[in-house]
Length: 492
Image 1 (cartoon, rainbow, N blue to C red):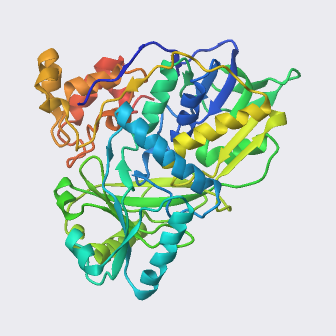
Image 2 (tube, rainbow, N blue to C red):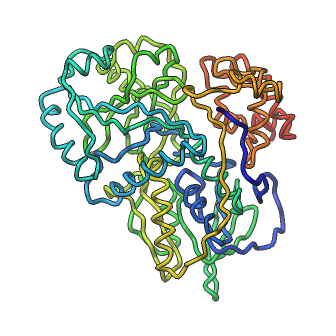
C-alpha cells in the first residue's frame, strides 16, 4: 500500500532552504560530495555507524542530475566485462537493491528482459553473451526461439531471429531510489546540505579538510567525491589526473500509457563497445520508454533534446516495434552519463589523503549504488576509519508511486483517515492533494515543482501539467511559504 513519507523518527538536520551568512564552520568525520543515487547511497551506508556525516549537494534537491534521467533498469550485470569492478558491484548491487526496494517502498516491477538478435551476426553473438553472463555469476539466461519471441512480444517488428532471455532484469523508480537513500541517511543523523556547490577544498595543518560552499564552511576528516559529471574536477583538487569525464548524452522518448499493452519485457539490443543500444522498456509509471541515444559531448550542462537524436530514436523504434511509433509521445528527456576514457568504474582510495574518488559511474550506477556504498565504506578502514556500528539504525518507508501498486485514491482506509487522499489534483497520474502535501512536509521536503514531480508523479502525465499546474503550483506555494513567482523561478 502507498503510504506517506514516514521514518521511525521524523527529526533531522537539513540545511539549504535558506542562506545563513556568517555560519560558523561545522565539523564532521566524513563529507560526501554529491547527492545523486551513488552519493546518497554512500551517506546512507555511513549512517549505519557512529559518525558525523555531511552530504553536500550543489543542486536544490536530491537526485536531480544523472540520477533522475536514466533508463531506470535494475541490471543484473549479465553483460558487464568479466573481472571488472563494475561487473562485481552491479551483481552485488542488484541483490542489495532488490531486497531494499521491497522494504523501503521503491517501486520495482519484475518484467525480465529479452536481448534480441536482428541479424545472423547478432544471433551468433548470443552464446558468447550467455557465457559472459555465467562468468559474471549470472547463470539464468536462456535462448528464446523466433516463434517463442513473437508469441511473447507479438508487436515486435518483422525480422527478429531469436533472443536471449534475462529473467532478472527489472524496471525500477529512478526518483524514489536516491530519495529513499538520502531520507534514511538524514533520519539516522546525516546532515544534508542542499544548494551548496563546493567551491574549494583545503587541508589544514592538522590534516582536516575545510570545504567552502556559498552557505557554510565545513570541516571534515575524510572526503568522498561522488560528484558525478564533476568528479574529475574535484579529483584534480586532490592532485590526481587519472580520468576525465566526457558527458555521454542520452535522449529518450516516453510514450503514453495507452502504449503499455504493446510491450511486456525490457527489449534490449546486442550491445556495442560504446553503448547498450536503443531499447524499449515499460516504466514503473505505466508508460513505455524508447532510448537512449549515446553521443559524447563537451558541455556538462547540455540536457536539451536534439532533432537528430529524436529522429534516430524514431528510426530505431520503427525497426524494433513499428506500432509504438504510432502512439502519442508524452515527454522527451535527456540524461548525461559520466563516461570516461576507461571501461570501468574509477573508484580510487587514497588512504594517506583520507580521500576516496568515486568516478566514472555510468548507466549502471543506479543498480550498483548500494554495492558501491558498501565497497567504499569498507575501503575507508584502510585509511584508518573504523567506526562502531549503531544498534538503532532506523528504517524508512517511502510512498510507493508505481503504477503496479495500490495508490491513495484507491485506498478507502487512507481517504477515511485523511480526505485529502481522496481529492485528485493531477488526473493524468491520479495524484491526490494528500500526496502533494505529504511531499512538501517530508523529511527531505519538495520545495519546487520538479521536486513534487519526482515524489508524486504529479505533472508528469499526458497533459504535462496543462490542466493541473496552476492549482498544484498554488498549493505548493502555500505549503512551502513561497510566492508563486518564486516557485516558478520568476523572481528577479
